[in-house]
Length: 390
Image (cartoon, rainbow, N blue to C red; front, side):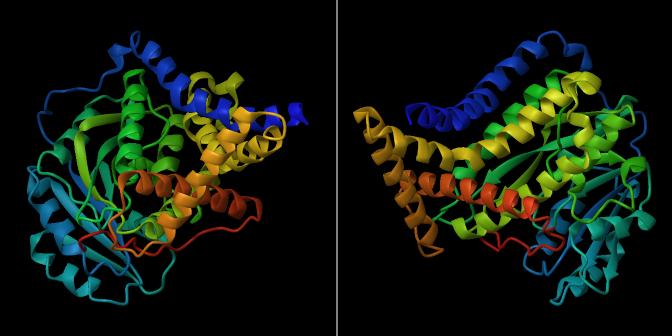
């Protein structure tokens, strides 16, 4: 029984130590010998023509703010085309977007909902220029970010450029504030990857890709930001992250909303990784395969295997006081997280309670995502996350 308990405890423990501690240390060591891969920092002689593609579904509360910020960026207006793809919206989204037609914003309406990736597929026929910038209808882009995002494409070896999420709270309760810490950690790891020459996935909130990578036939259950990075690698291009290309991402107003968002995002990610599973072969793809396994697979498996650690503690507690104490603390954390998850949406939570709730969200989202994957249940459409302050 002790051997079984130790094995169950070892699985999530080793996954955590490697994915969240060992892998960043490995990246830091790799980055010291690959600084020659830094993307260009100078401005091009002429900024390329770009299309900013924005899929939207029932985004009447946020789309005007997103468009106003985008049209206020310092990227040359005559080189910037904005395309909003309304995925069968039933609110005032289309009317709001049409009001911006005189400012270079085009509306492409899909008569029926097909999901975010299907909406992005539909945009392929309307794209202009050589670079496609992808963002969401709830994202605010600061004035200088587009130039920072597009500048690296002067390097012919770069196919995708990822921006950097800045997680912001728009209400005082901020029950999802654990997302700020996790997002900051994720952006730090992505920056470390970029210093080593390439990254394993772009942020879906803001990234840019060469137009050749914007395939119209991407399977609708996949997520384009991740798939674009994998497509770029297979075509011989690198994906890099630019820390100065920031975007403001409002946190969800409640832990339940964050759970829905995270479960959906992770389910799409697992499906995308499985679709490109050939790239996890270390004998053929070396360092890139290591990145996919370390940054994606091990992290998603860590959260899904945490219940095994709880079972291991329960088994070990029969013969160990230390295990009994650890089990009691873990159960308190679980109950606290469950209480936080069930709390009213706009109720302010103490930081320890909110963090336990966020940990519970991550565990449940992982279990939901892997459950959908194993059942071959695909998530095609999405509900817009009701962001705080909207």
